[in-house]
Length: 267
Image (cartoon, rainbow, N blue to C red):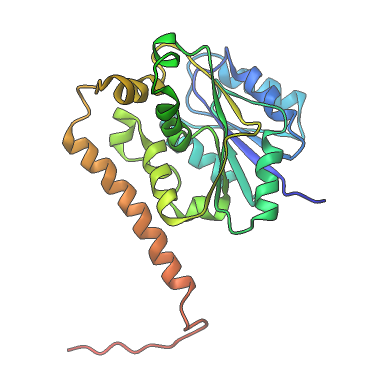
């Protein structure tokens, strides 16, 4: 049975200590197309390591180097633009796939062609006990699964139609571009979840993005710089993505397919 192949995009910024682990977890996936390593202006030896890995797997790995640090959203989007695959996945450089993670996603797209996005399982590794032992942890982690940018596999045309991960300066300052796109996708498309199957190992560390989300959900602790105005701006970006997709649907579903000469009347 010919399941589709999937290109994987890994944004890399000062990831020399974890990149090889992530790459090995991708290379072992039977349904891998091309692995795109996008260095985002690293100041350590991440780019050198990425090129060495590409030499080891010349037919499987492509390396792209951004001219300067532009943020994870821009790096991911650049990788998506380089790919020509029908399906693309995003993995963070400090995480790793479990065996057959891409196979599970590929099978969904094969059997459920109306699926625009697959979310893989996201398993925390070495998560601090203050989170893991909280009675509401599972509920909070479900939000993480549904808004994280490192456990997603997109139909590439849909991803590009959404405009990719939003690059608004707000998100470069506060983070949250994953959530803005993730929430929008649930409003305009069929999002399949595979939370009981092989997925992504999310290696936890102090200061990671998930801490801010878990602090807010479990301990009602909000960062001081996330104001009501900032939240409103983030919600507006989500609404814009939704409106963009609805306008596209309107055009693609038009009964007036083909060339329609028009004449404008001036008053």
